[in-house]
Image (cartoon, rainbow, N blue to C red; front, side, top):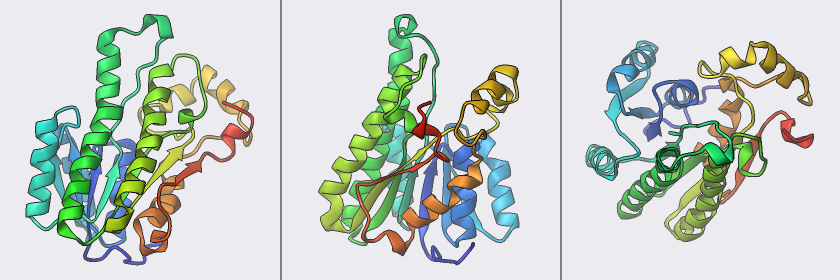
Amino acid sequence: MTDGSLKGKRALVTGASSGLGARFAEVLAADGAEVLLAARRVDRLTSIVGSITAGGGKAKAVELDVTSPDSIHQAVDAAFADGGIDVLVNNAGISIEKRVTDFTLEDYDRLMGTNQRGAFLTAQAVGKGMIAREKGGKIVNIASVLASSVLTGLSLYSMSKAAVIQMTRSMALEWARFDIQVNAIAPGYIETEINTGHFNSEAGQKQIAKLLRKRVGHPPDLDGSLRLLVSPDSNFLTGMTITVDDGQTLRGL
């Protein structure tokens, strides 16, 4: 479905150089938005921007490091000066897998600095711009089913995504009067180029076999929830988290 519902809108997608971020950018562009693809390394965005524009969409590459407050403010301020931001998909994030006793302070600062502080500062900067612009907006934070579930080795990641969900609720509460809807998507296991090696390994196949429907998702499986949350159809929906996991958490991960 490409209904043009975002025609005339501008969308900023963080962490857009690969995986889910790249897919989100493609979907928003297909629905008519001018998409600002943001990542630390602009060169990694070139092919995605080229693919979108070759297909008739509108896209630009934006240098943005969510671990740097200065980088966030420079990118967001420039975007508002150049036409505004109507939609933010707050997607940038990383994962570090270790046992609780093995995490270092550097691990903690790196992961929380990206997933928690980076997500907050980006949404905060965009929210301020939307409030000043007085045209409302949509913010979609990318959380995870691990915000409410636990797996060995992913304690910090789970903590960071739990914070993203509470952040979503708090922002939705404070910004409702400005016609800004803030919601989150909590994906389950989604196969991307980062984890495809694992899911195709013996250990990965055993993991998949334990899932309720014995399969993992793929980036297009999130298209519907994203389209809902950025479209006028979600004008009466805010502070919510949509879990998209194919029932994976019904049995526990």
